[in-house]
Amino acid sequence: EDQVTQSPEALRLQEGESSSLNCSYTVSGLRGLFWYRQDPGKGPEFLFTLYSAGEEKEKERLKATLTKKESFLHITAPKPEDSATYLCAVRGFNQAGTALIFGKGTTLSVSS
Amino acid sequence: AAGVIQSPRHLIKEKRETATLKCYPIPRHDTVYWYQQGPGQDPQFLISFYEKMQSDKGSIPDRFSAQQFSDYHSELNMSSLELGDSALYFCASSPDRESLSGQYFGPGTRLTVT
Image (tube, chains in turn orange, cyan):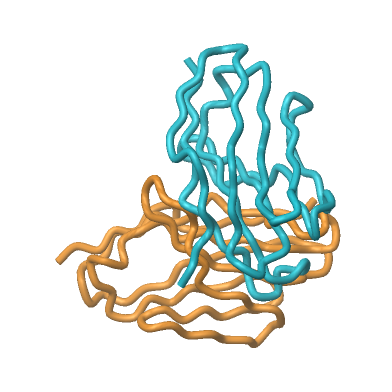
C-alpha cells in the first residue's frame, strides 16, 4: 500500500535558522512527488513536483530534493512568513490513477 | 493569475440534509479533483473528472455524488449528511490528466453539520 510519512510533525525555528523537513514514501512506481504549503483554513498551495531520484527544485528560500525513498524540503534562512504546514504527496501506480496520497504534514513555526 | 474558485466558502447544514458544493477550475484546466480534509488531517481523495467523465474514485461515500459539466465546472452533491461529514472540502484542478504540472487547490468549502 502506498504510504507517505512526514517528519517532524512540528518544527519551531528562529528566523534565519535553516533546517530540513523529511518525507519518506513507499510507493510501487513513483509517478511524482509533490510539495505543498498550507496555511490554516486555506487550500494547499502547490510548490514543487519531483519525478526522479537526484532531481532538485528551488523557489526562493525553499529547495526540494528527491532520493529513491525520501524527499527533503530544505528551508534556508526562514522568515516568519514561512510559517505554515508543509504537505508532501505522492502518485504511484497502485493508487487510483491521478489521486495524490498526502502525508500528515509538518507544521513549521518561525519566530523573529 | 486566475485560481480555482469554490462556493460557498462556508456551509452549515443539519443532519440528514443535503448540500451541493461547486468548483470552478482554472481556465483551460480540464481535470478536477475533490478532496476532504477533516480537522488536523491530511486531504483525502474523493473523486476526479477528466473531460467531463469520471476519472478516478477514492474514498467517496455512496451518499455523495459528483459531476463535471460542459463548462468544466464541477459539483459535489452530498445527501443524508452526517456529523462526520463536517470537514473542509477542497477542489483542485490540473491542466493535464497526469497532474504533471501539479494539482492546484481552491480555498475550500468549510461544511459544518449540526
